[in-house]
Image (spheres, rainbow, N blue to C red):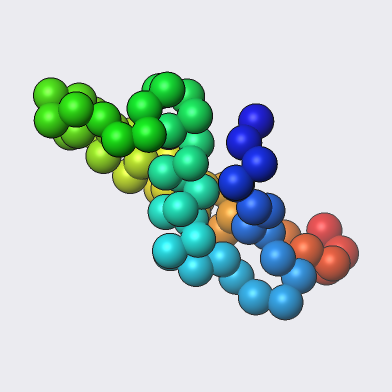
Amino acid sequence: MCRSIKPLRLPDRPATEEEMYEAALQYVRKVSGFRKPSKVNQAAFDAAIAEVAAATRKMLAALPAKGSQA
């Protein structure tokens, strides 16, 4: 998908909010085709980033810690 998105399910620590935001930003950029959206599209772009970051946070919270027995 996008080489800039790094795995966030880490064995030694939880992902930070910044890491989740950056991954969401890269995903939205890739899917939308915008590096920087126009002012008209900025609200939709920002909302999508927030939603993807929230979904990422929820998914990571639901997964067992990497290396643990599930």
